[in-house]
Length: 108
Image (cartoon, rainbow, N blue to C red; front, side, top):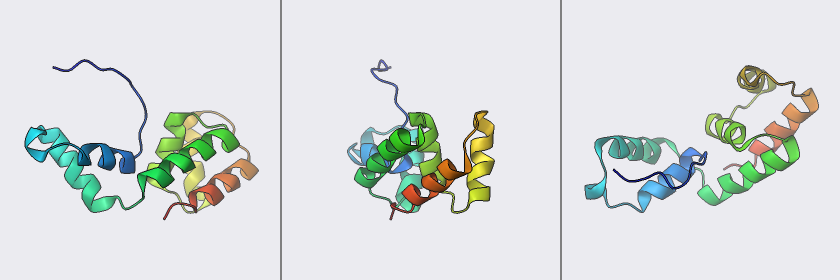
């Protein structure tokens, strides 16, 4: 078994990019299932996703994990966004939530 070298939260588009570089014959069953899933359901560009992640972390003071969660879910309304951020147990102002939604609109 390979040693973990780095632990980092990555978006689904980044997972697709990473697994896309692996020979399918070298993947284990979980990797194949994951790659099949992201290939079918993820259409965002990983470069755009990384930029949006940086922007959310900087402008909205989110952790990398929080930014990735929001990017993967891609909420489209304040109510939907609030339902996810509520579980983080930290106060996020309405203006910050609105900024987050505006930033997420940059994902194609």
